[in-house]
Amino acid sequence: MPDLEASKWYTTEEVAIVLKVDPSSLRRWRTAEPPQGPPFVPISERVIRYSGSDVLSYLVNRRVDPTAA
Image 1: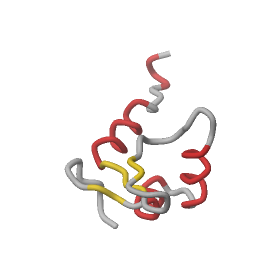
Image 2: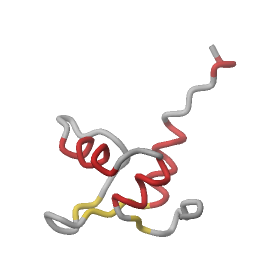
Image 3: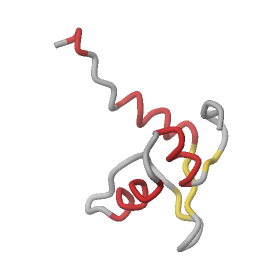
């Protein structure tokens, strides 16, 4: 899968590829209390979608700049 596009919606499996984690990690993050990981939209009990812009924002907000310390 190429780069994320901010205007598109992605499955758990597609986001897992981008984040280089197993899809089960995203599922575990969603069910954690409080939920972790990027924001998601539950379409139904078994269908989840992630906004490309939300995933990009999640990554930007978690960025650590070692030179800023």
